[in-house]
Image (cartoon, rainbow, N blue to C red; front, top):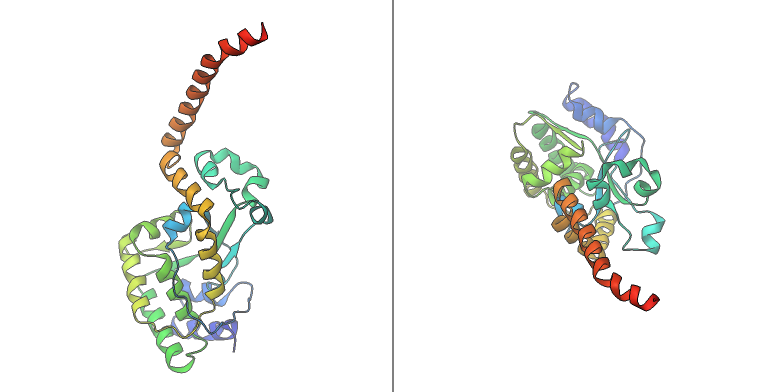
Length: 251
């Protein structure tokens, strides 16, 4: 039994009115394969974002269909990432060539309501009892637990439209996900390859260094503007200093 077969019936029995049911039971089917290995480590959403991974809401997909997409250009030039530039200068997003050249983690939207935790707990219990080696909902919760450590991670996912909640605060969502993650004993994961890809991307020194530079010098539009103006002033000062030397040489 694959993920799509398991996901079609169970959530609808749990709650016909839940947005979670629709998210799991609709969308383009995709095969999930458990590799036999659990996810051992994965950086949280905030760190991945700082390293240049762009979190993107995936429309028209099942809840479990999370994909990591990396352009061919970044395979050839690993240091080519301008996610920091797209963030500070939003008008550059009008150029598809720049946007498509970035690295994306595409995640379907998760709606979190008062009944969401109960539904997920029931699904997790059912999988752990009857489908221990095809526990796709449990795999999904474990992945979320790695990505979400604090309310800052939730805030990032909310800003991207990936999480929509009615629990009152980002912290409440983070606590819910972390509590669910504690109740799962991983046997294998259909997201193990995805975690490897993300860890490999983060392990690239160039990506982490670019992320640090972005945080320090382009953390927001004001800091980015100050960096840009400071760079221009430095260049003008340098040209004024070197100008007389070049002028004498030409004479």
